[in-house]
Image (cartoon, rainbow over all chains, first blue to last red; front, side, top):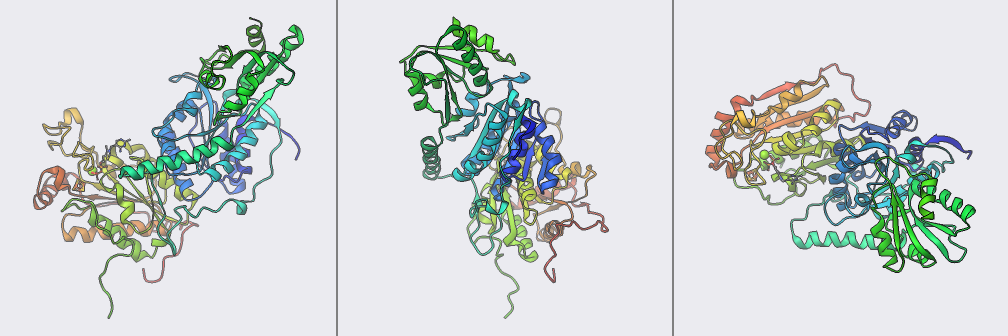
Amino acid sequence: MAKVLMKGCEAIGEAAIRAGCRNFFGYPITPQTEVPEYLAKRFPEVGGIFVQAESEVAAINMLYGGAGVGKRVLTTSSSPGISLMAEGVSYIAACHLPIVLVNIVRAGPGLGGILPAQSDYLQATKGHGHGDYKLLVLAPSSVQEAVDLIYEAFDLADQYLTPVMVMGDGMIGQMMEPVEFPEMRDLGSLPSKSWAATGARGRKPNIINSLYLKEEACNANSWKLKEKYDEIVKKEKRSEAYACDDGELDVLMVAYGTMARICKTAADEVRREDKKKIGVFRPISLWPYPYEALAAEARKAKRILVVEMSTGQMVEDVQLAVLGSKPIDFYGETGGVVPSPDDVAAKLRE
Amino acid sequence: MKKIFGYPESLTPSHTHYCPGCTHGTIHRLVAESLDELGVRERTVGIAPVGCSVLAYNYFNCDMFEAAHGRAPAVATGAKRCRPDLVLFTYQGDGDLASIGTAEIIHAANRGEKITVIFVNNAIYGMTGGQMAPTTMPGQVTTTCPFGRNTEHEGHPIRVVEMINTLETPAFLARVSSHTPLHVIEAKKAIREAFRLQVEGVCFSMVEVLSICPTNWGLTTAESNKWLEETMMPYYPLGVLKRPAVDRAPDPMAIALPEGV
Ligand SMILES: Cc1ncc(C[n+]2csc(CCOP(=O)(O)OP(=O)(O)O)c2C)c(N)n1
Ligand code: SF4
Ligand SMILES: [Mg+2]
């Protein structure tokens, strides 16, 4: 299929359609509103259902309903909206329901700003809603990768019966790049869902529930979730190592999403001009975090530089991977300030 | 011999956890009978709330969800939009629907979601032990308005169906009561009509049912019935507030009613 030039948000909407999603519920918020706008226009052509919810609280509960009756469902939002969805995502995870949600991260905390940031890392990977649950979090660093990860996210959600988040910064949502779309999924080939609440015809009622008043039952559900998360940790870690394959590195940078792209450019520049060996490690799955792959690259490096569009939310995970074996520096800007390749290069030269 | 009365198929044969005298159980039965009579149990999905009826998923013999506090209309919206062939109902208390879930109910009604909402107004938070609800009567004592609801401080009770009645979107809106056999018969008619309109694909339908909570009102069942009649009924008038226009074009998603219903 030929490449088309497309804005990230619109490409995300189209990728969801390709993945067999025909149900979108969401609430406008910059910088991701082009996803609902795109789907509102495009869905009628493919028999999709688009609902503008009254809030993100309602939107995520509409996903709960849609996932519970067995359909592939999507919502997209940005930071403040994702905070409002935490309650619903906790219920969805507890009920073992598959959904895909996209966070096109903007600057925070509070109302923050509408410019790109990476300041929801901890929320996505360690926190969000209440209770013992996890989100599988994937972080694209190009529009093409956003398309590919969205396409895959629906399969991962169905496979593990869990919410999957694709987290991009505002840059991923707003920039235009050439993309190639995967084939349209045949809706008939989607996994069947015998657990869904579709009417108790000739069978016992199916109940979508997260209430366990008996402590043993509640405990058991948390451990059932944990077992699933252990499997995800085993099988779903993804990362990329860039320019890490020529002996000892002067610096290994660790960055994800758009920031990783900027770091690659800076690495090339410093390699070329200063004849220093610089590599970039890019986690693609933020949870599960690719600790082992990072540790393997870190072994080759004299020091590590973590670069983020936040005040350093991923540093703890890098520390956990390296376990004190290498010095770790951090460089970050946030609030919508996007470090340029020159800014990063200057840090590499320090 | 022809069976003329029995246990509804749409109820599971279980003992409920409701307090003696509580009318939640009666209202469950009216919903179940309506589903049976319309022949839709096998394509019905109910949404239980957070409140005393949180365990309703154990009592209705159909597919069920348990929703977060107040969010049942949003859950029903998602389910119904994804599967328009299903019959969706929510069953919610006054704290659930008229306080924490106000946005969800107003907008589901305003979008004209083809769902049926059973709204149980007992003027109190039953489950959490008798706190003030948005529907608590002026002067009514609860654990969080121990000197009686002061309208200067807590405002006046919300008349939810009247509020929803201000919306342009076609709907079936009714208020009934559950405290005497005669009222129960009327309540049944309204609930059945509400479901029937959904099954025909006509409109959003909502029935508010005045209900008693002897436990948290601190009254006997007989006293509760009297209090409901004397205090709640004058403020919450019974009747059908809105019926869809009869000549409304049928929804293309409508499913024909079985013969004789
Ligand atoms: C988000 C959230 N806030 C608060 C609660 C606690 N809570 C449980 S039930 C309830 C009130 C229910 O009252 P109502 O809806 O009137 O139902 P009733 O028990 O009277 O039938 C509250 C506040 C909760 N479960 N979730
Ligand atoms: S507390 Fe009130 S509403 Fe709840 S079961 Fe008892 S009587 Fe019914
Ligand atoms: Mg109540």
